[in-house]
Length: 315
Ligand code: SF4
Ligand SMILES: [Zn+2]
Image 1: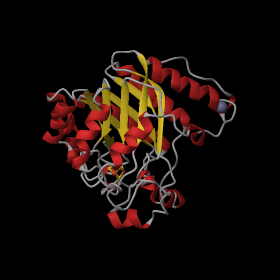
Image 2: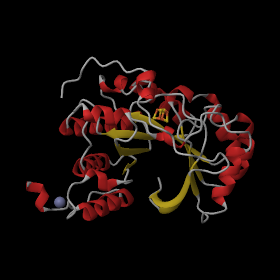
Image 3: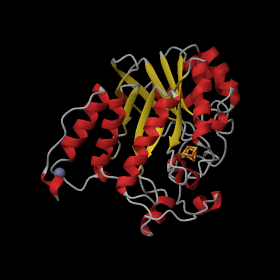
Image 4: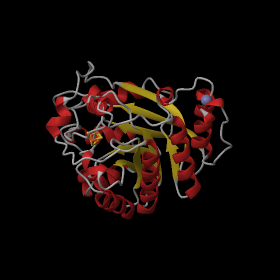
């Protein structure tokens, strides 16, 4: 596919969004516990709370997280209330992720007045993972960690290091910004996790795989402790528009397997494939189950296991 001179604006992305889901600021919009391999190589339960809060101010082309957000800042006390609500309903774990469909240190998303109460609620966890944009990574993150005392980790969307596509994603950052944030966090003993997209607009399948691999390599070299490969999904309006125009194609599950294998082969920090909604990335009902299981086993084991053979390999 040819990469056009395609200038994305916030308004362009915004105008393609559909309606949001109905959310309740007194409750997280989801919470769950799943097993994950820790940095130390143990398989342990990790609680994830998907907080309901104000929509992220960035307008990234591929983002669909706005669907479960509010238009206004939630009242002071709502976020700690949501955390309490979820913790009371989940089994105890040593690790927690607080995902807020945006940036934890966006003060219009999570009011500063709530920090102390949040710290009281999550301070007992060994590991706390939050998500944040490089533009919001500064001393405040360190001060928060100093009060928290847990091992704080920050997930940052690198998305891609493709020099022409990253600006099209409207992420408002460069790979250098990502690298500086990872180094800053590392200097303060805070681990980083990179989110990397598989499936980019204006690239074909093969090119998308090449750039996902390069992006994993970049993240690992920058010093992240963990990378997560996320297949890009339509459904947010902007990606659907590009798909209709023939400028975006959904990645295939086999490509996800290939990028995960590549990432694991570095043996430098954990590399995971995002397995959510994986059925959407396969057209073969014969092998989807086996491929999903293989990806899951590679996520947990962090080693490459024999690939799945199927009649669709020669189709
Ligand atoms: S910064 Fe993250 S949450 Fe905000 S629009 Fe971009 S991808 Fe979505
Ligand atoms: Zn198959």
